[in-house]
Length: 178
Ligand SMILES: [Zn+2]
Ligand SMILES: [Zn+2]
Image 1 (cartoon, rainbow, N blue to C red):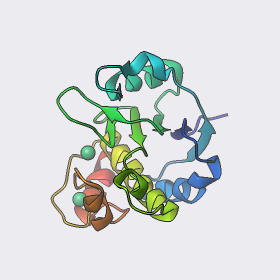
Image 2: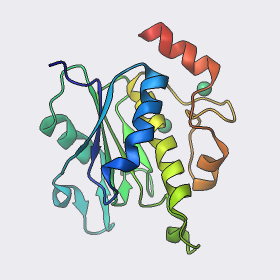
Image 3: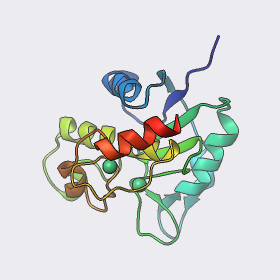
């Protein structure tokens, strides 16, 4: 059996079925087979008690070590708040042109900002951030096109402004590198 080129490792509290539509989207965008599986990471090992947050790069290393999938990409979805040392927080992180990525839904819910809960909006944001981080693993850099999924986002409002798909330039770059 050939292993799936993209594995969505669900470490979050969401059900795997949350990612069914997204898996199809990823297949369309990146042209690769995509599967969803329940997974676990040793979160405690990445916890920084002084920040009360989890080191995203440490978790990327765990993903690489724990989920072997030759030539495949692995993206973990977590509930916890992620950081890298130079930033207050990150929505996610990926290895550029590599195999591992991670996305947190912690700051993607309106509840986090004291607003009423909107699960549909949270999932929409999560899907865009997953495609964005996967884009990095497929070698894409940040893009300045307003609606492109590869545009970088610091705030959730910026995620809401972009689409779930890469722009035509980014798509062309993907096709050339495959
Ligand atoms: Zn990015
Ligand atoms: Zn673009």
